Image (cartoon, rainbow, N blue to C red):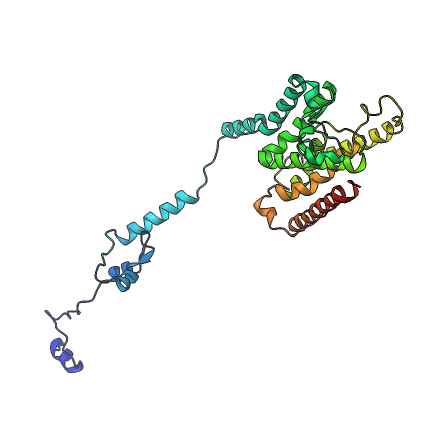
Length: 329
């Protein structure tokens, strides 16, 4: 005889379980889909539906999209956001050509200004722009910067223009024009003050101090952007070669110039302006120039910048005391 399922269920269970044609009828429970939907993340409000119910239960409106649609949308957005756009070979070649022929605006502007002053400005007016290391320069402070756009002759102008274009082209491309301008002005000022300190009898003209400052500024640029600059080994080598040639030229030419010779004033080379401009270019570039993100947090970069700031501060204090006290006496 077949047992009565309904009777057995009522006898074994304290609570009667409803049956329908010998089948148990389960109580009504929410499906797992709404519970999973409550934990779904809402990208608009940056909260889940469960959090929105707790924060604002009266005005709560559930998501109108299905859970799998929301997940699919989020995954597609991540793919679009993080997939980089690849350039073709033609586009990469075009970018290299544009970067290679991109002119240095500040360097070319300074060359045009120097040529214009040399060609169009009369000789009498250029005398007001030369640097004369005398106590009266306090009343004519523009001479400390204006002498950098005046040159003795066409050969002097051409030499400075060519070297400035050679050393400033790549430097202005890797750094910005105003950083190069800061090194240029710092080299000119340091050259004038150095000439007044070491060669007070020489009238200084020319942008040699600025050119040498740009030349030595390639050394900090290589350190700050190491691994991101091409031909990094060639730049220190060029600085060493040009510095050695300038030193040899000064040593050979120095004994030939005597104070009594007729060309001692007009043919004498202001080697002090060259030396001070080159010396200032290194610490000034460490402070002004920008480093890459990977190199900016390194310890040796911070130490170099701190040491450069200390050296420049000490130099400014010493020169200020010299020109304020000893030089006037």
